[in-house]
Image (tube, rainbow, N blue to C red; front, side, top):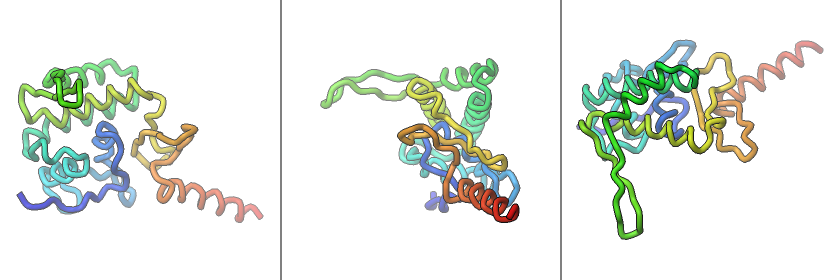
Length: 188
């Protein structure tokens, strides 16, 4: 397979669960989807880009079956993040988690874990769902949606005081500050 194109998304590097949700973003006022042929990519090419960006390319293949499972996980995660009380979203996440498990191992460094899947095409979807559980365990209040009304991105707030509001200060944060400045100068 050829080397995947550069990841075109405005926010990358979030935990795998949120990074998967962020494969849909706003671009020039339009909802764009990395897995729907954005920027001239095919659906599987978009998957290859995401696997590479998320650090999963060496473990999983970019193919049609993996993409279908990943889209299922993305929808479940997006719904669960938007409304943690959504029972059907929790059921969908549980259904994804049914396709894998953690095997406890003993390594030279001590206790370890190894992920196992009933079908390897479920691997990335399962990994994202498990990552969401880890976020919920460690800091559920730090899972945030960008404060911009026009942005659909999510992030894990790792700031010291936990007050991050924007997916990116360079993008949404800067636009908000510029808008407030313009409103103040216009009032004068």
